[in-house]
Image 1 (cartoon, rainbow, N blue to C red):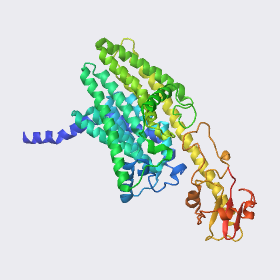
Image 2 (image 1 turned 180 degrees about the horizontal axis):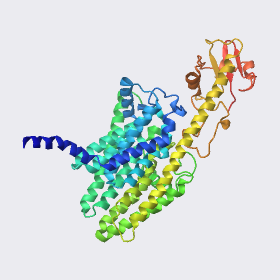
Image 3 (image 1 turned 90 degrees about the horizontal axis):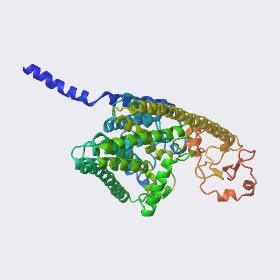
Image 4 (image 1 turned 180 degrees about the vertical axis):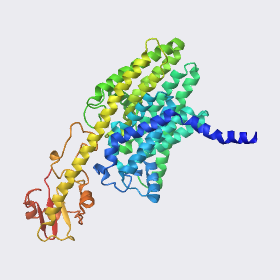
Length: 523
């Protein structure tokens, strides 16, 4: 009897682990990795330093000055033990693992059972074009993926822990840490919260008004408390380091809002939900995905109407709770418009828009057997639409990376020619200082960008614009570095310099008074 008891004791933990890790968890985890590598493998197995990746090759980018205090803490810790290097395969795979873990939490939170739905959830979360933009900043992508995981974990804890006060505090802490890495993931947390609320209302219509209200109120409290924690921690780190927030793109005005701005933000959020931006870097439903987006919206409305009718038969109040969640969803997706006077948005900031494709997956999963076969045909139609969208996004990601590859090679070729021109000048020496005239601090307008390869449909930042930080590229890619004159006024005033043509014309590179002068066109 004792031996039998010991065997049971030894087998107990294994059974518990097996019961916890269900097949849906494994399916969504693997699906995220497979879809992610299919979409982003081109980026993982190459090295494209385009845009800010060139200047942040060995760090995590701006941190405390931009309100990303937890990114600063993590970056300093990693720098101490591993070193921050923009390594594509390591950071790319790590980011997918964080995203896969977040998707496991979503599957558990939304009680998804169908394998096909789990595969589509993992796929859409991995291939959504916001990630294409994010992988352009490889030096920080793993940290941002961790922020996504923290945002989802925070809502998961709020919605699942039995002790509500404990869930609120832990959820708020996770939201705070997520915002401390990247503030733009607040809309993601809010949309996950809204979907979780709607899902719970549908699954448990027998719950009382008080229980439904408390669930929504707890979630809102957790998010608001997380915001408060974030601003407090941000203030502490700024004070300790004796710095202030940068005014770049109005980051220092984040969170500063009023009733008028909030009303305008809500109106804009609804407008962009109904008619998303078409073309440009903010278009997350580009080209042939646009009709898919509207078709998915129609299906979502149909699923909501079905659930509303079913709930109305049981309890009118519960139906109104579901309607309230549905009305809040578009605001959550576009919550950035309520976060203050943000000067500009990037695709990297728009990941919450993927939840437009996740909501109908949850709604159709909740449909029980019905005489009109709504679930049967709804699942088939929705899966067909999302499979097409997933394939399109996967192809779009590879097109973006192809353009980055071609453009980087073109720029390196241009740089090699420039270096050859400089070194071929009579009297050239490695110890001479150099003056680059008529180029901005990034040097993004010094060469004819219209000649660079431009693939159709690629407008998302950072793959849409010209090359930045070319002087760093000269050193890193071409091994060419000279002491650069910071004050070029004296050189520019010389008659022989004023008469120089613009590069690449003959005579645009000269050595004058012991200084290498390279004159570009004024633009």
